[in-house]
Length: 235
Image (cartoon, rainbow, N blue to C red; front, side, top):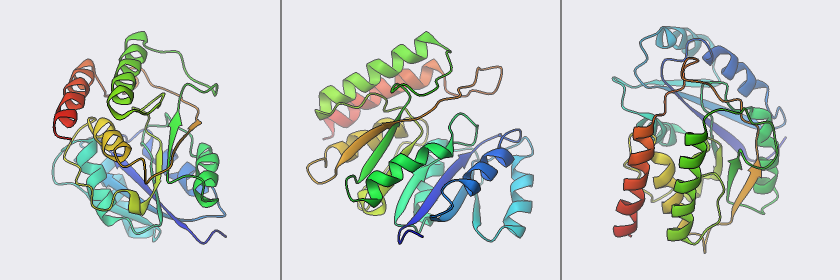
């Protein structure tokens, strides 16, 4: 058993069809590691909230937080970070697009003291569902601009999987409520990169279509571009 504890933060909004499977996969992943699971329900209205209430009553290793209203992924993550007590934190979406088995290599880099922050990347040769070119192009443009401003070389800043030591976020104030969290997090930790060791590893991606419940839209891409400019000016 590792001496480090892993806190898994799962922001959840209207995922009644997948949340049970995601929780099961998270619980089974990396059995050699002590895990704390923190689920933040972001005002679900499809039955997810009610299901999570039953889980909160019977699962002692699962901590469920109920946001009073839908505030966005970034707001849910902020609350999850506040509640997490583990030495290492990983972000897990509740929609089955990512496989917790991919944590293993991310964890190895941190446990062996090679990395402080490890991003997954959907572009390193693991299974990747073929979906929307405009999403791919938008992600590449956003990643390129962040790399240009921060002098980094991330291939996929919009990826869900980010694993990091707790101390990485100590003293950082995150303000983005929605999907803009990905830009804000990346830019703020990258500006401390002389202190933090940043890595990427390949992860699988089982993406969803909009008909299957995908939530991010072109508006989030436009906002990401605005946020890059905003955080650049406020450096």
